[in-house]
Image (cartoon, rainbow, N blue to C red):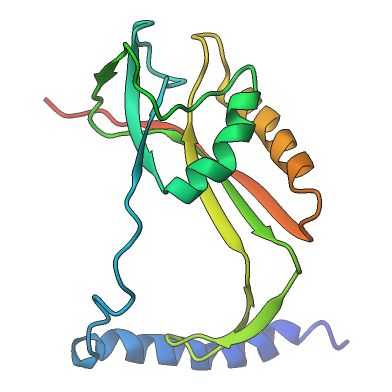
Length: 184
């Protein structure tokens, strides 16, 4: 009997969050800007990949960006795979530009101590669990025309989970490659 009305109880709690969210949107012009309060970001590192879904010549690569820390953390596992690659050296290859192209990315979240804190949302006023860990994201590409994006991801994911065995929380996810079509 208690579970039957749990959504009604939850709706009352969420109604206050909705009211706070609407108030937050309506008072956006009165809040001070936070631009420049956290300092400058780290410089991006330029990396080079071969796309999975777009055919390019053997001497061509596509340019992408990531943070130096993410590249250092993830490139070893990516390049250890026989079907995935990312490199910081252009070598003798030529950079090709595709409008509206977004490379495949592997994202690793790692929390060594499984530490969580209870935080309160500035927007809704509701409490949530905030996981205190490190997030890394690095683009990756194929080694040959026949390489599959999902197979490459699963291979790198297995290597990352093995390499980060000591971490209490580890999540590895894929952001798929996107190729946009430009209107004529």
